[in-house]
Length: 584
Image 1 (cartoon, rainbow, N blue to C red):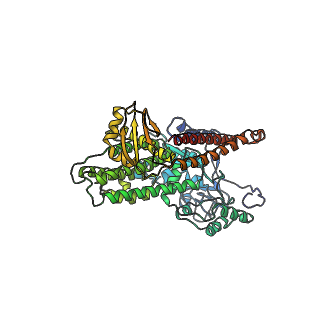
Image 2: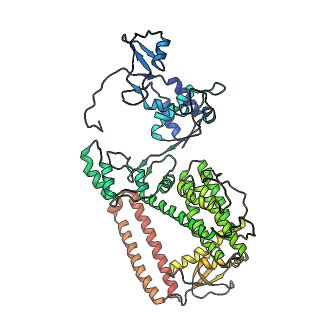
Image 3: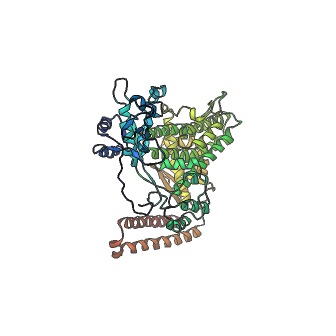
């Protein structure tokens, strides 16, 4: 045997069986008719493959623990079945002096588990719980037990439970099938391989000696202990740091592509721990600027900035996308949607956009921005709560009173609903202004200009709408782009030597004269171009080597070609940048 390492000898004994053919027909039809649906749908094929070629089910096991077989034997070998010995004696009129002994076998674990959906609700009594909660809604399980558990629950439930019309009742309406979590190399986690990761260790952290001891304890094959210890030391030289429950939960959701196995990635876990920290720090900023301040809950005029209106619409869009993902069991997409809004839109953009208003706005403007801050943050905690239950509860307890929301816990709050569109124009205007700000930031990066240095900007080819968008939002536009001045020039007027970017047809020029040391920048670019040329030449040599191309796997060659394309694009950008600098 794989575990004991010794020969297995067959031993024939009498066993108990269930004839499941008739039950399987009913259970198969329930899926065929759509009473029960599998997500992803492809797993219905696995279900049908088992059910359409089903064999009688051996339900007796020779184990110490379990539900004991309800059968009794007398000294003559007669078999009596009943709920207990008293029932057996009564139903078969057995005298008290007839010696009975119960079968020593226990029921197969899957037999007991097959009764789960209704036995936990008070069956065989017709309890209120059974009437209210059965059939259940969604079963979450792995594909490896679709037959062992799911199929048998369906068969048993439809055999024992009938609705008011006498029709078999299904145990649940949807079966959501998850993939298996494998190690980073795609291997199934097992004790014998020494590649098991305990979720508690990822939550609380564990030092290396404790981790090695845990992975090598009580091994059935002690000869593998040294190999497993070395592998663990190489993989986790410093042990596993604490990541917290929320980071682990969010990672599992983010990796949960429907029905696919998950190759566990510790880097993703670290990334989502950073996401939790980002949310926590964002809430600190909001609370710092709203607690003990007027957030508009007690009256007073509210003046919403373009950024306030934009974030409300973006959040509404996010709610719609997030709920759609959940409705379709795409937890990976839901996590990505939540991450994108929280990190990129709320934290990186909106919180920065609030600073000019909170520093220099009127009372009505500051009140409007504070009101928007607490409103969006409170609703965001409700939206994120299924994925990040602990951190959202902690934040919600602080922000809910500021947003005028009453309640004991976020768990009992209504889930965010999609609202009617209110600020469509603001959303479009803000997204356009973000493109302009990003274009200016990209020029800074390309020209190696300090992020804190104010820049003069010249704008040409701007239509009336673009000019209006910039002029009406000059305060936060200048603040986020770090601008010294913004000047609109005539379309026919030639701009001085500048770094230029396009947003639509509008041209953004940043004059370079006086902003950089031309000779020093040319020297830096020459050095970068020389390195880029060597990178291109190295990849080209590798791809022109027929011996390499003929023997290397296709994915390796694809990576090298992608590397070549990246290197060539980098070289072209550097040369173009050098031309701009040389013209100053």
